[in-house]
Image (cartoon, rainbow, N blue to C red; front, side, top):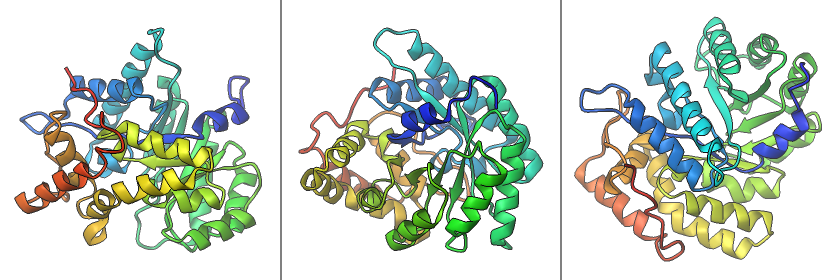
Length: 322
């Protein structure tokens, strides 16, 4: 690793709400670059200090290779613009990479050379996944950027703490994991069995953040931040303060919204977020297939769900994007 890579410092910076920005489209269905910059800048202005462009909420698998790089460049532009402001602190950019190994390696090197701070390696989507193959997949990508921080994305119960330890032994630039198995007991067991010193990120967003926090996670991902950054930050503060009364109230108020995203095996995960943003005047509701815009009835459910957290954070609607 080169001298600029400080794992301990980066892990400290990553211990927060990790926002997954949406990708807005224009009327022709192309990525709206200016709005991508503006929406990322809105998150930064509202206190979100870690962003993962090209995450699942960013429709990673629906973007072309060129579009993924353009999205990353837009988010870096927003970060660099904010950094020039005295009101903004440094923002950490964790670029999503994945698909076949060579594509992931190419995108990882592009992220490193473009000024990102780390990569998040998506869970492989190949249906025939062996646990040892998961180790090999992540190790080869991480070893291609040995001077760069790496965070694998884990969704399979088959991956144990022993597999994670073997990965870290082969690729010491793996500094943490986004853990997205919907089972707090499995999380606690896996963390206890894995190598020490890793940052564990609750990868199932606010719904699982309180339970995973108690088992040792010190960060959580969020698509909700695209709609209401203050709500996610209120939950983070409560968890850091061991204020489980407030954490429970936030959890109950956002539960319906997150359940809408999880309904039908997460079929509407991104559509719910974009519908909410559309209702607030932030972007179009468009998503790309195989996602689909919400029906009128479900759009009304989104409006009802948002109303539940207004009493907690009256300024939830946030800033309109110019």
